[in-house]
Image (cartoon, each protein chain N blue to C red):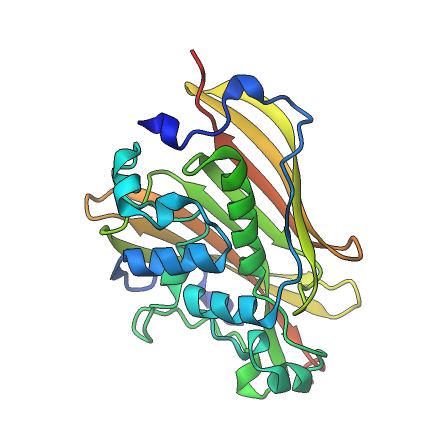
Length: 146
Length: 158
């Protein structure tokens, strides 16, 4: 019953198509602390404001991996679960507590390789000033209608 | 950083992929797909169970103990020496689904360590670790690469 979870078919996607954007507005301290617990990273830069200030920051900032997690969510909301073959993230500007972000992306390539129907996606996360906190490259394998 | 660590492997460790942690992680990354929250629904899909969100394996890395952790000589902000670490880049390569109830073995090695000239002068040091997540059937499920950058509040004097 794969039709339960397949959302997008290879035939329906074209190079240049945009990934439906996903926003988190804002990324609250609560969201960051919840991710610390779920992901297991208790570096104090991500939950201890006094510690972050002592190291020269003006407040806590989110784990880079939280943004990567948001992009995973963005792509699964669009394509369904279990289609990613590869996800690579470069971390850019910090994602500060209470910033608002949007996950965006565009399909750059559509091709068949080793019997799999694949798309490459250039994606990024930008904050409320348009600065990129994450630059992301993804490859997904899609089902076909035939 | 201790450049002699390149190629070194950590002792592998084994951890369960618990539904409770998978569900908590989906929730924390704002992923509301019912497949993570409803095992009966998940069983009817081609996975036959609850799979894991795309970046979930990072959850397991913090289960490493001093015996299974590679000490690369990095200086983080809790040591009070003016050093702190930034995450530079990560990559997940997906080979097989990981399902709730699986038992995973994590193999870690130091893939690379190098230095570059920073944009504002001073050298930047990079350490790349590779983690392979293997299920109870001996199948490689996910390969995860992580690049960490050593930073300093004030440049070290030596």
